[in-house]
Amino acid sequence: MNAHSQPAVTVIVSTYNSPLHLMRTLSGFAVQTAPLAELIVADDGSADDTRELVEKFGLSAPFPVRHVWQPDEGFRKPAILNKSIDAAAGSYLLFTDGDCIPRSDFVAMHIARARPRFFLSGGVEYLSAEATNQVGEADIKNQTIFDPAWLARNRERPRMIGKVNASRLLVALARRLTTTRPSFNGHNTSAWREDVLAVNGFDERMTYGGLDRELGERMSNYGIKGLSVRYDAIAVHQHHNRPYATSAGWRANDLIRQESRRNRAVWTDWGVRKPGESEPSAEPTLHET
Image (cartoon, rainbow, N blue to C red; front, side, top):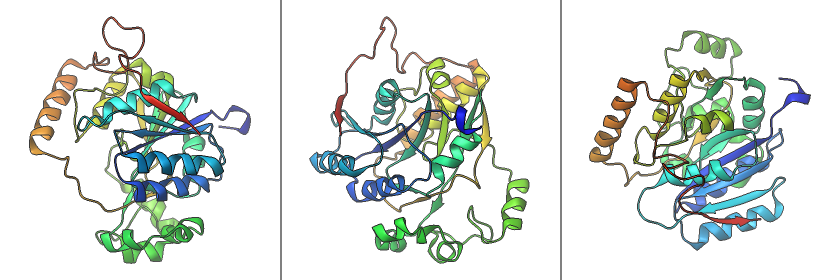
């Protein structure tokens, strides 16, 4: 994709009461080599310290920053993502989470690989708890945390071939041999806004566990296929606990995904638009900075 056809990119960062992790994520986007049309923080009911952080970041960010917030009524990530999709000004949406720190070429890689009728599927390098606690702003600005030797010491689990390697030959080999199918991964994925809206966004019945992949499966049914940027668009994941992850939630989500596969579903009635509505059912709180 040449410079004249680059899409306007809206980055959507999901968060919930994790201001320290979010601060590092935002610091990563502040040093991107490619332009953003805007960054939206999709906030599932965080306390005021998150709003204050976003407002402060917006004062110096090299792009517009918007804070889309909804009241804390339990895990409702699909709903706040749908509100953010609806509010987005960009024609191209890049999704990540507020526990992920992007490498400086993260946005550039998504732009370079963007294709009509495809979504892009990336992954993350998982940091250990100890490494996460030690990451400072300088480590993000000078990209220390993306150095292959640093990652080899600080991954959550040792790997022979990670997503970041010093050898280009190893990267090429990993890209060629990987058996991981490209899926819609909420921590590192991008798609055209019109394609996401064509399937009505995320299914708001879903809780934690596969809610992003279910959207990708409906997009695939619609003819929008996945392309891997697993070894190109790089981000690191900060260690944290997941008290919202429950076996009951996984089971409920799995039933929805099974139904979508069985019916080759494209549209969900529990998405951005609800039956009988021309606009979303509830307006989010939106702060411009």
